[in-house]
Length: 186
Image (cartoon, rainbow, N blue to C red):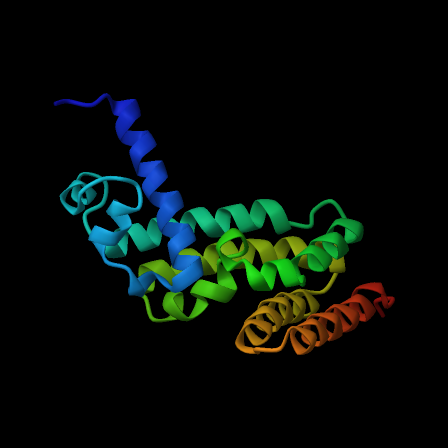
C-alpha cells in the first residue's frame, strides 16, 4: 500500500513529537526504535523510511526542540518579556513535567555525549537564544550567566525529592536573576 507524501510527513512529525516527549521524560537513550514506533502505532521497520538512524532522529529532535525554545524564550521584545520567560521557566510545573518544557535541562547531558554535528546544532540554537538575551540585557556575560542559571536550577530542582526544597531552589534562582535583570548596567 502506497501512502501519500503528506501522510509520510504527518507520520514523521508524529514520530518527532512522540520521541521528543519520550526523550524529555525518560531520556533518549532509554527507548529503542521499536518502542518509539510502537508509541505512534507503527512497527519498528517503518522507522527507517523516516530516518536513517536513531542518531539522525536525535539530531532532528534537538533541532526541533531548541527551535521551539528560542521561539518561546527569545527576549527581543524587551526586559519585561525576558522576566516573564524566566518566571515561567523557573516553576514547579516545569520541574514536574519535563516532557512539556525546555529540552536543555533534560537532554543536555545526552547532547554533550553526542557527535559533533548534534553539539554544533545545539550550540547554534543556544547561542541565538543567548544573543537575544544579551541584546536586551546589554551584557553578553550576564545573558550567559542567566541562561546557565535557569537550566541549572531546573536540573538541581529535578534532582531533589522534596517539593519545598525544589521550590526554594527555583525561588532563590528567580530572585537572584531578578536582581541582575533589574540592576542598572554600569
